Length: 292
Image 1 (cartoon, one colour):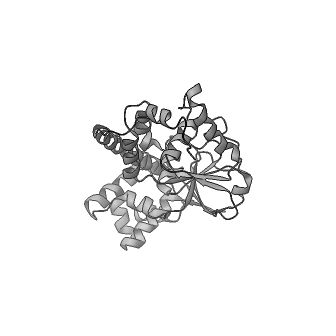
Image 2 (cartoon, one colour):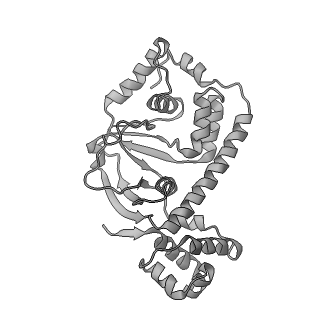
Image 3 (cartoon, rainbow, N blue to C red):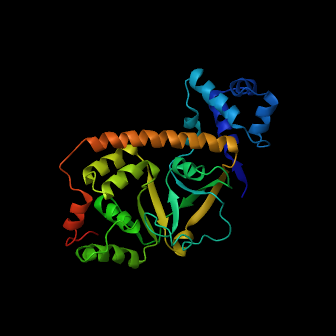
């Protein structure tokens, strides 16, 4: 399948939506029309300075945000960001040793934004975002929300102490894992949630504060494909190359700004004290309750 150079993809989107000529784009990017033509035809990578000019021009002249073009071009769907590319068959056991939210598996996010910011985190690599079609037809799946999601993530992140009083809770989570679901679905606890998640697991904020932060950040869902059967329902629709240095820097800049905003947002929510239960209290409460 032909890979699509991401910058060329959304530069064309800008041109088509705003009816810009190549000369207008050239003036916005402080480059020649021939350079714009090369970018549009995927024959040249763009430097960060050109993207910076375009970003500033759109903001000051057209009152547009370049990130709207980058991310709004892609509808809600199924995306996977890879820093090294996917070669051969998908191996759901490959990340078995990592402490991931839902354990080992092949992860899909529902937004292009989350997948692209993940791969752009490093300064170099073969960054790609894959767009898939995917169906749950014929699959055994579990959707986790609220307190069930919290404890499942806590277990996989090794946040539940392996003590006698927590054995009932641990057995429940392990029962879900050993059930052998094809897919597990739930919110993404990404970098924007990191501060609130840590604060919750460290008993600094309540469960209510954590959920408020989660719902207000609107971070999307993740699908963890646990079996080969689930992967057989995947069909790759497009591959977007993100290894253009200029574009990678732009997305990293966006990710940093978003992380800073999320941190401030979390701090505000953390200051809104409530009478909700802390993690240690919920561990005790669900020590004898049914969780799933």
